[in-house]
Length: 441
Ligand SMILES: *Cc1c(COP(=O)(O)O)cnc(C)c1O
Image (cartoon, rainbow, N blue to C red):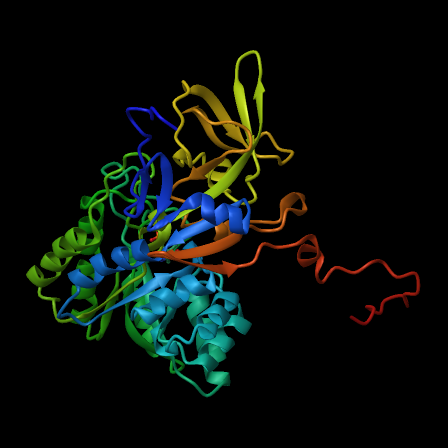
């Protein structure tokens, strides 16, 4: 390689991804070494990036009573959870399965909070027996059910109510879950009544209040408005004689996918903590549930270009990663930057980057200027959050392998799934079946 392109492609948001001598590196590792060893498609995460993202939150809360509960639905691989738990985090879970993951990595159960609109009785029981720190309850029906389940077990469930702060949709059009008319949370106007109801139930103990206004929010004002709305309620509840030990402010801080410029977590939180202090609630324990902002820009997905295909109106690059590995483009028309792992001096062409799955929704990027040849590799950027955790096995494509990189060190944290992994648990129809009796497993 002699003359390299004057302008290597931008690498949005990734603190530890860079080009060196025409090659893409993650921390101190050229990424071709990862794919040579582990194949493609391959998710690779920078541990230093994860710790740096966490440290921005930790700085903001220094000297305060606060708990950062990583929202594991963003990426629930055990080594990712382990990294955050060892750095002091709690975990925000949304299912019994996620509870098992949390316990597997040895988090203190008191640092687990359980979110979600549809907890089953079995999940409530499982979480009570594990001794989790708090249930974030989203409806009256859920309150009543949790009270019943806790009473049966002779326990008292620690709760907070997820309140919908109803921040102004016109002012903040990209807010999705903090508005009236969505399935999440309890309406702001009903919160006082629901708290009074909860206070009557002997199987419950009120610990705090919770909100989560949406995801991929890249500005401070909606968070400040939500904080004000929540503090209005806290004032109202306290004047009604209720005691709230904590405020859980959810997650939602965005990352850089395409030149987005979200505030750094410490900048956002110094603004929010100032507001909290100014309104006389600076002594309350703060919980937060960040997901995407802790892992999104730490990860890339490496994929090999299988074929180049030129059509009348479009050129396609067919790659070996697909919508089952990276569902965000197909699900949300989300943008992920796609860059070559090797810079070449050829002129770029405009391509749609698509996967092998039999769906026209199976695309990873549209109209991308790239100079790459079959057999070479691409990196899909900002792929640390809501990619592997949403991956499926559609088309009997086993899920990709994952590696964690730290400095020069590389560890495989998830093996690539084989077809027999995918078929595990499936059974053939047996000709000898007694009517009405399920066959023995
Ligand atoms: C998804 C979710 C989070 C995490 O959101 P991010 O945008 O990834 O930070 C936190 N809390 C709740 C209740 C959630 O549903």
